[in-house]
Length: 169
Image (cartoon, rainbow, N blue to C red; front, side, top):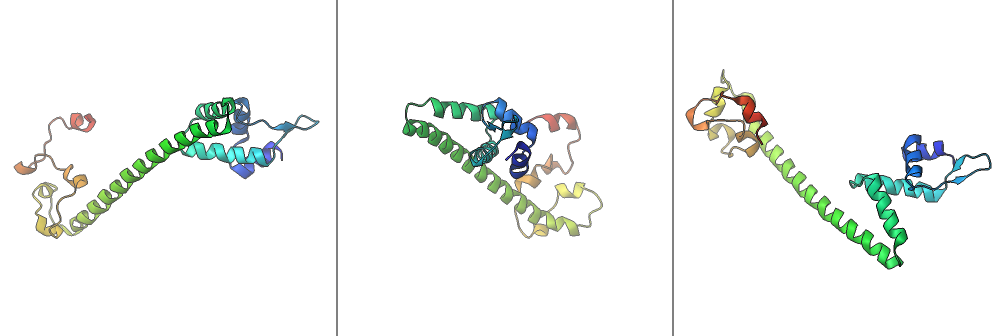
């Protein structure tokens, strides 16, 4: 297939495929007329590159991985390095999933808590600082909500130097 066909099949741009070739990630055959010709191996390579990019690899890292595999003295040695790299990425991915699952729980908990705010008839947001747990069905105030309130005990929001508070980590 020609480069345009490969681009359509993989969802990559022709420019990206040219870049892959320049970086040594793809090595297409050439027709008698000089056209790049791609087969199933190149198609698989482009899908592989896409998956590695989804994993967070940069093109330079992918090239380095290929160079390490090609320069390895044995197939098991080459695959050992790839296996270690993938194991590390799998650990990182699982950690990220756990963080996202906790974030999902925090958001859902906050939304449940905030449902009571829809029926609140208070004329001022100052009442939010003094809101009782009875309105929220005894649910404790979630962390994503409690961070909204400043000087909770005093009944007033802290209005001094609010820009500093927003930019301070």
